Image (cartoon, rainbow, N blue to C red; front, side, top):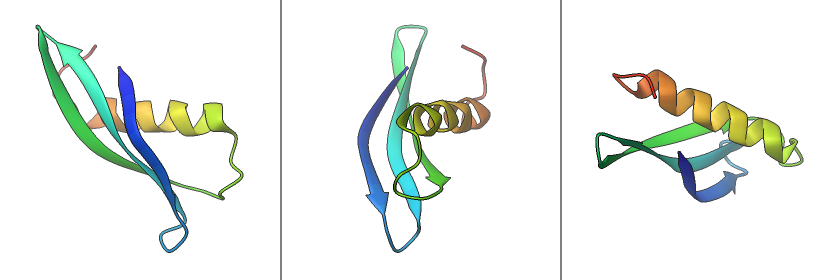
Amino acid sequence: MSIKNLRYSAKEQAFMASVDIERFGRVFRYPCAVHGPKNMDPSAVVKRLRHKALQMSDTQV
């Protein structure tokens, strides 16, 4: 799993990114957002973005 284009939107007060999940030799991209303050712990942001992508996925990684 990899996170691409991570950015913070002050208007939305959320971190936004594309999360890529590779399955069966193919890459599936999920647009994800995590609400929180700009100074949120980076590891928490990554963990929550990955969790969001897995929720959107139709199969488990």
